[in-house]
Image 1 (tube, rainbow, N blue to C red):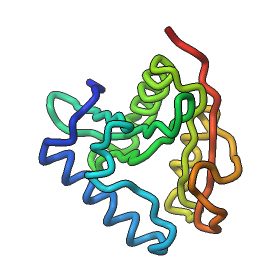
Image 2: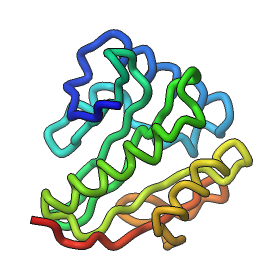
Image 3: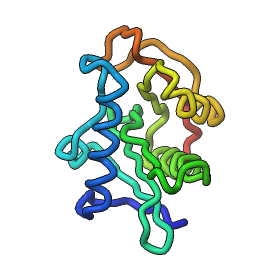
Length: 155
């Protein structure tokens, strides 16, 4: 599996992100969907990674820098064909190590509280994330679970 920073220009990446947004909108009330669209993911404060196997897209994820030392995980998604193959864990590990190297000291995230999001919450807990109050511009929302993790500085 090759994990690298991506510019979101490939059609398979665009299709995976469109599928991601459509599915989130189908399982979450509109006011509780906090996923970023393509334009927002292309902003300078966002780093976006893809995982591929011999050119086949397996998954993606992003970190949006909130300030000099705090980032937020966005758009974690594994393709349907690659689920339960360790893609999300490999992507998350890479995103966390690259973020620590870039000077981030904390990574937070918002995910859903519905059963659909249980595997995501379990993955984040496995990686040491713990529940936290809303951060950044988020407000309390019964459909949102907020989690955070301190990062170990890497050089």
